[in-house]
Amino acid sequence: MAEFIEIKNLHFSYGKEESKQQDDVLCGVDLTVRKGEYVAILGRNGSGKSTLAKLLNLVIDDLENASGEILVDGVNILSDDMTEDMAFELRKKVGMVFQNPDNQLVATVVEEDVAFGPENLGLDPKEIRRRVDEALDTVGMSEFAKREPHRLSGGQKQRVAIAGVIAMMPDCIIFDESTAMLDPVGRKDIVATMEKLNREHGITVLTITHYMEEAVRADRVVVLNHGKIAIEGTPEQVFSDAGALRAAGLELPQCAQLIEELIKSGMSIKECGITPEDCARIILLAGGATCQ
Amino acid sequence: MKNIALGQYYPARSPLHRMDPRIKLIIAVLYIVAAFLCKNLLGFALLAASVVLLVILSRVPLKTVLGSLKMVVFILVLTVAINIFLTKEEGAEPLWSFWIFEVYTKGLYSALFIALRILSMIIGTCMLLTYTTTPIALTDALERLLSPLRHLKLPVHEFSMMMSIALRFIPTIMEEAEKIMAAQKARGAGFTEGNLIKRIKSLIPILIPLFASVFRRAFELATAMTCRCYRGGDGRTRMTTMRMHAMDIIVLIVSVAALAGIVSCNYWNIGYTL
Image (tube, rainbow over all chains, first blue to last red):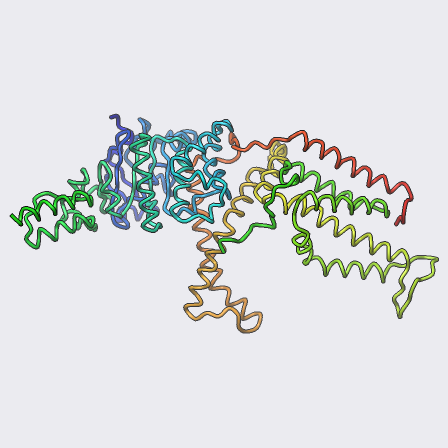
């Protein structure tokens, strides 16, 4: 698969030149995301994960403080000859879903809101209509098309926000803590939607979160700590290294925690399970082994 | 709070609801002009008849219509009283006099006309606009009607965008205000005690966090809009195209004819002319 996002030695800090050295938010990030990949970026508060997301869409204050390279589809978006039109093209390719669903919805009717992005792209009304219906269908919100957003639940609002991004048909969607304000049901819905978009629609998904359970489903997990990449690998690899995770200020997913406790209390388990299914299988196997 | 209705919109299926909002806006303006130009009894009779017609066409219950008049009752009574008691007619016998007040025929008629003018104007525009058109359709129609003005560098699109965002955020911000009030009450704040100044002062702990939050929301919304490729009205298309049907054109022509009819009534001295 081809590289879609390539970040090379990215440095960033907020504020003026003088105070720059002490509080670098990002200090030397190298990261590659391939087309069609599902990557989870984990990190505790202040690890720089949201800053990274905003940089990828050039929606950040103090952009001039960024150094290094971010190549999106081969274009260096941090280069000096980046024009407004190029930024527009970038945002067409890379969509973003934010944390607070209320602060992303523009219109007073669900379908009008989904149409907002395609309308900005200057598409034909018929094409907009088609995309809106399709996007609402993808997130399972078709029956709410004529409703007012403020009457929906948090998870439903967030699904509308996602539909608004899908309707622009981007190659990649970045979820910037999009589940942080939702209840467990809403969170589950959104994670399922992310997975569906990645697996069925081939959209590159970059999800930024501090919920371990969400990262378990990704192809690759990247852990950020103090503006640097601390751990990188498949979910199995990352979550088998409890020490490194804790050093980055994170906890294991609940299933991995359970396995860890079982090993501590003397059960003979050799592998690591991170999904509930894996976990059940491992415990059953270990239980069977001790019975013999 | 989740059920607050924006404006007075009354959801129903009626010929008035179906009409192109742009035409409704134009007719509402014509209507107000007609109400002001009306000078004699026949003209007002026509005006009143058209109000009745509008109410019937809109399928809004009479009770709701009358309810909307509560706010103007005071103004109505005041203007009627002033017109009855303070209109002087030269060379005519007063119908009735008491202390400094004298009532003339002219006064009675001008009071009747002004009452009809106010009532028909309010009911007429409400029927055409607020009751049968959603606020968002109204701002949309306004944008489309005024869009030629953008060649004069007037920010027509930006204005309507602001309006629709304001409409979108009214319920959200009201909900937030309630939450903040509850939080401040939990800390012992009282909003219903003391004199006026004290009460106004007690609103400060609500307004400051509310403003802070509104600004935060505004920044986040601006970022989200940028990410969705928003860059003003240039090059933007719309999903819903407003289409004028033959019916809309016919209604417009009939309305212009009605306006002409009402105005021309002024030239025939039918009924009482002011």
